[in-house]
Length: 334
Ligand code: ADE
Ligand code: ZN
Figure 1 (tube, rainbow, N blue to C red):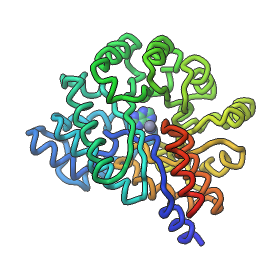
Figure 2: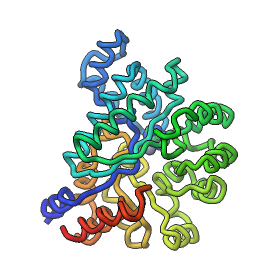
Figure 3: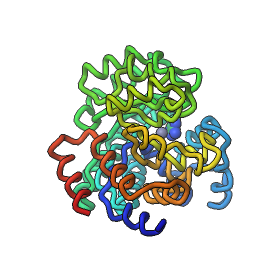
Figure 4: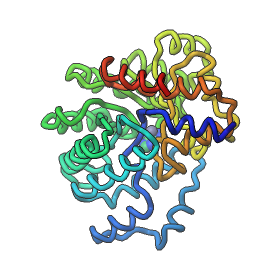
């Protein structure tokens, strides 16, 4: 039965709504980019890199993640990184992606803002043309930095408004509540950006409330800890707020101790609009279908649940209703 469900999940068109492009940097690519950019990295082999991916919380991971992205230097690097991710995803029948990048992780290292955004955009256009994968790009503010620095980033994005559809909030959650970024999200909203924020990954339900009420997000990234507050759960279900859930990430970062304790099934049973996503696939053990396979093996998901998850991924996307309808019809027909 498990493998039947996995095959069914693989056959459905899906969208990915929570993916950090820098987190798709595979160890092999890290070596290749380091070599061609003549950058020293503190690892001697792919095995050594993978062995270092042993995290006990979000910060452990972020320390390695920011170090890893240091090998990304040129527009070509960002193009190659993005193309590789799109090819991997297309193999899992992912048809639409809304991907994050962390501009401040690159401008802080002295790269011009345009290097990342131009390389990524060129690959996204090529991916739509050659793979049939449509896309939107979301730039995230790093929440461990100040709101003033987020405003600078928003300013740098001005010449690139046609390339960037949304604004997000990521990095170290605890101690950096959404309220810290209320003004910059208000400005981004005025400029017409779609809005998302990581909330309730490690942070408490109050952070989820702040993301909803102060940042006025269109979608919540993670949201796991919302389940600690029944009133919040009812509201999320009533508003059909999309949660971009990341099962393998949750396991690797010890948000859950065991996949069998993952709240995904509970979220669906509560009527929450949960979706499955890979977050940082190279660091957490896999892409879209690896995540589906892990939850199918661990949780008592039905065929209807799988169909709902695929549908939720399009319903929660920033595609137009007409664009969503075509994908939803294809899922119904499967
Ligand atoms: N940056 C990349 N992945 C992240 C995650 N899961 N949470 C917060 N910030 C991130
Ligand atoms: Zn994330």
